[in-house]
Length: 271
Ligand SMILES: NC(=O)c1ccc[n+]([C@@H]2O[C@H](COP(=O)([O-])OP(=O)(O)OC[C@H]3O[C@@H](n4cnc5c(N)ncnc54)[C@H](OP(=O)(O)O)[C@@H]3O)[C@@H](O)[C@H]2O)c1
Image 1 (cartoon, helix red, strand yellow):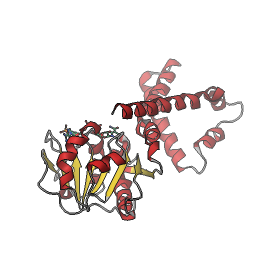
Image 2 (cartoon, rainbow, N blue to C red):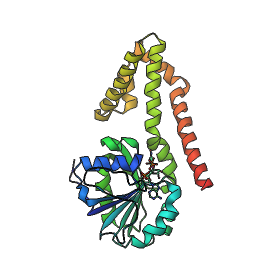
Image 3 (cartoon, rainbow, N blue to C red):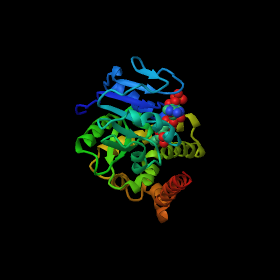
Image 4 (cartoon, rainbow, N blue to C red):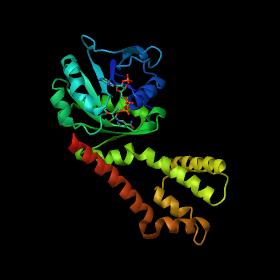
């Protein structure tokens, strides 16, 4: 891993399932807990050395990076207390789903850098996917600082068009749940063929883990790998023929991502 450019101060607003995973990974990668303050109404401890507060400080230290990690509907309340503390030298990274950059700018006019991020849950083990977006007003150094901060969490992908956020969320944000379902179905299909349930579950999980790691290291695309490991007339080919018939699997996944994307658009309209 290349050197990480840690912010001088990190202020987390909310530290639940997602922000908690991000922070856990940063601490594992060497972030000094003394640089971190977490605001959470419950006041529950987070990690050794990390300061937890239940209310806003009177000021933020210079060059603070704020991570907005509460629920999207809380933005107006949070901004009412937080925006007056933010100066030009504050960087804000928001993981709030469905909250566009323009909306964030309206709440936080002062900071030079506002960045939208869409992480997924494996960020906690450094194998997540995080999509980042910002606009041309944000200086290159702030983009680089965000890339450096997010890199220890896994793959970082800057996206060019904010309108794509719901598609991105459908693929990588919701993707872990879809893959969990796939692993479960692979195991249950093995069970349906007569394998003991616990053995099928272990083998399905290890098969997906091994195949994903192999695909990540291979020079061929996953699509090409599938064909390479399937000899004509063999067992794998016979199985692939079922998945491939009329693009069955592709259509199923396109429908799955479309449904997730459509729900994102619906939620944005509902506000
Ligand atoms: N979960 C995902 O897979 C995922 C993926 C991408 C993005 N996101 C985004 O991540 C954000 C958090 O989701 P989550 O699943 O992590 O939710 P969560 O587990 O419910 O965490 C919410 C956090 O917000 C804190 N909080 C509650 N009220 C607050 C207030 N008034 N001011 C400041 N903080 C407050 C909570 O404090 P306590 O800890 O004290 O209760 C908690 O730490 C959402 O905006 C969501 O869109 C989530």
